[in-house]
Length: 396
Image (cartoon, rainbow, N blue to C red; front, top):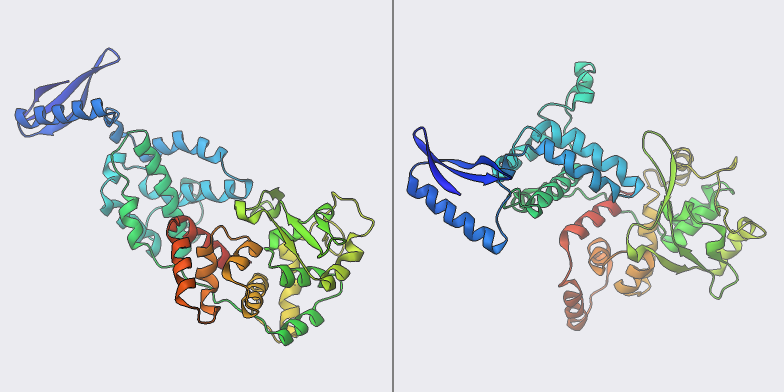
């Protein structure tokens, strides 16, 4: 590398692959340029040198290179939503920026403000629609956080490939909008009874299992007959997959559980086993345990239509399906089950998730238990837990 006069300023030149290129320009003096050369050479010796002109790569071009590999590692349920967030909320607003421009946290900060306020251009695929439809809408705090998380990954990869030196999302993460918690609802025993009485006979086993095991919706409707053992003492089921419906197409897919801890065995009562017996006895192991009233997989849209009517009839209007999972956790805690036991049963990845969701339900505990919980939380990855807690609160 060498310093070279360029108009009224100085620039750094280098020979790369037999071609002379400008590495950096705009230095006020030859001394400043030479100092930058020494720094760059030291970085190169330490392995910290950036790719020449890597910071000038447009974010849109970097995403074109990065996204296919990232998509390949996503589960089918995320392979739709994640790229859509990139296309709709990152490329239209930031795609024209060079990576080095995005190193300035203020640029990302303005972008977050635009997402929250609903300002800025839409994706090209949407721009051709009528103006009213093409207007950018304000994003919810949860969506803003999700989109910021993807940009964080995009720029972290740019740092790893030595295109830029720092990731501004590390700074802007501190000013993200607060999560909006959906109010959790916990049913009392009489309310559970009223709900089961209002639910038609065909759907009663499914609702009872949700209350009695705390399974997620997708885990329950994705259960295979062979993964339920009604003859065991106590009866039990094994969660090895979850069912999802892709938005837009309605295609049904089956994926592995969302976290390693979600792959678990859950016991349940003899009463539930007796209710499940007609659905289990004499059927092929590969069949779905629960089916729609006319056969086939249980689709959430169809089930929800009935759910609204049944909950209203039971005097429980506004109750969400996922509140049955919360109810199960609350029952366990009220009976003295420790949070670690609740965590394993409902399949949370960490005690921190369980504590954040249900810790306020715990009775007063002694200092020794609190110390143990502090130790358990010490090595927790807060970003990952934040995402999981948001998912739990936003479930069906």
